Length: 448
Image 1 (cartoon, rainbow, N blue to C red):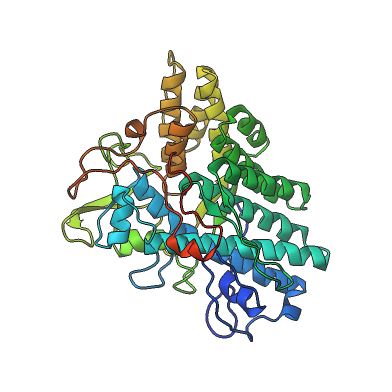
Image 2: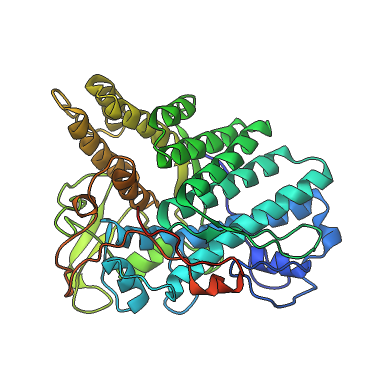
C-alpha cells in the first residue's frame, strides 16, 4: 500500500505549526473556535511567502486534522478525537471511563457545551482554515500544485466530516490571507456541506498535481460526499479509477504528546473506550466475530471507571500508528454499495470476496439476497473494513437519511449498560462557543 504523506507537525521551542499559532502570528483571527491572542515572532508573513513557508502551513493543517480526528496524548487525560467520539455515537465503542462529556457521546445526550466536542469542532476548523490560507498564499506564490491539491482535499474532508457527523447549521468562516476582517460564515445544511466538499474535491482534481495519489485522495473524498447526498451510482463512478492499494494516512508520531495517536492513548493506555460487541441490541459483533479486521484483547480487567469490563482494540498498538483517511479499499466498498443498491448480488460478491481473499478471509455467500439484504450485508462488511476510522457514524446516518431505515434499527437502542436509555439523537451539536459568530443559529436540524 502507498503510504502517501506524513503529518509533519512540530511542537515546542520557537517553531510551531498549529493553524491557531500560524494564523494569529500573521494577524488573522477566526470565529470558528480560534482564540484572539498575539504571538508575533513565530512565523512572519515574509517567511510564509516561500516554498518552506507553504510547507509550514501545510504541516499545521495536517497536524490540526490529526488531533481533530484521532485526538492526542496531550492535555488532561489526553485529548479526545472525532474517531472515538463518533465510535461512541455509533456501535464501535462502549465508554469505560468517567468523563461526563464522553459519556454524553455514548448515550447520545450531547450538550452544546460539551468540551470534547468543542475541541474537535475547533481543530477541524483550524485544519480547514490553515488549508485555505495555504491555498491562497500558494496561488500568490505561483506554484506548489502538490501542496495546493492536498490542501484543497483537506478542506473538502473537513466539510465532508462535518456533514457526516454534526447537525445541520455548521458555519464556515473565512480568514483572508491579507489579514483583513474575518468573513463570518453562514450556517450550512447537511446537503450544503456535502456540496461544498465536492467543490473542494473538484478543485483538487483540477489542480493537476503531478502526484496522482493526490488525485485519488480527492476522488475517494468526492465519492464519499456523493454517498452522503444519496447519489450512489455517481459515487461509484468517481471511485472506479482509484487503485485498491492506494492509501492516504493521517500520520502520528512519538516525537511529542500532541503528535501521538490519541485513539491508542484513550484505549490501550487510558482504558476509556472499550471495543463494543452487540452494543444497544443491534450493534455489530466486533469482538465475537473474531475477525482479523477488528482485533482485540482483554476482558480480564476493568476500564478507567473501575466498573466496566474492559476490551482493548488492537488496530492501533502504538502512539505512532497512522489512521486511514482514504483508501482504495474504501473505493471498492463504494462500488459495492452501488451494486447492492442495484440488487446485483454477483457484483457485490465479486467485490467483497476479492477484498476478503486479500487478507485470507473465506468468501461470503450472497446468493438469493434481495436489495435490502445485500445492503445489510454490505454495511456490515464496510463496518469491519473501516472500523475506528471515523466512517461508521456517517454510515448509520446515511442508512436512515438515504435508505429510509428507522433510527432505532441502526443506532444503539434500548437500555444503556450504565443505567438509563440510549437517546434518539444521532448528530453532534454546533458548540455554544460558535455564538460569537453573528450568524450562529445552533442546530438548524438534528435529523439524520
